[in-house]
Length: 204
Ligand SMILES: N[C@@H](CCC(=O)N[C@@H](CS)C(=O)NCC(=O)O)C(=O)O
Image (cartoon, rainbow, N blue to C red; front, side, top):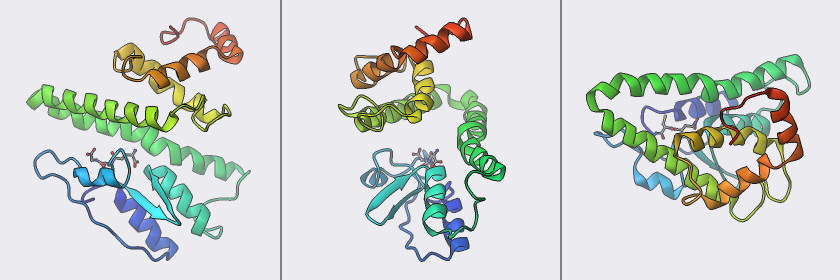
């Protein structure tokens, strides 16, 4: 998509020397949102998204990790198990997880004076898009990866705890996710951790 995070993926593909085909999507000139047709590729309809070896992969960090692991031939990432790899993994998560969040917040806040309602509507609509997506990915499984609990459940729990206090995450709209969160919070290790960490605003 024009003017988007997908530039990083094209750049990395060039670095890797992997042949690829670009399917170009244009932002709506007024809203600058992605066209609805991108939802046919992935339910979130965001850019970048790639198709390779029969899989659709979204989320720029996941795409970059995938490409490096599959086509890197030991280039562009340090060996696993080294301190350099930990630093590499840190930046890989930090870019979208911490830094880009602030950049996007600033972008939204600088425009909020102009049209507060429109921007709030966009945040709520994007939040619901993500919650609907995770609800459908979870399906009837007890945990995000299926039958087995994993660290992915641990990492994913916090945004839902915060969204719950914001009132954006409610059992009526996302019953499966709600039950999943309750399942996580009932785990003895979760309870033990809460007892050790002291008051926690998102615990109830
Ligand atoms: N964290 C995601 C963000 C994806 C994302 O929001 N991409 C933007 C383009 S930079 C997008 O598709 N925006 C259009 C929209 O939200 O409709 C990633 O890194 O891939």
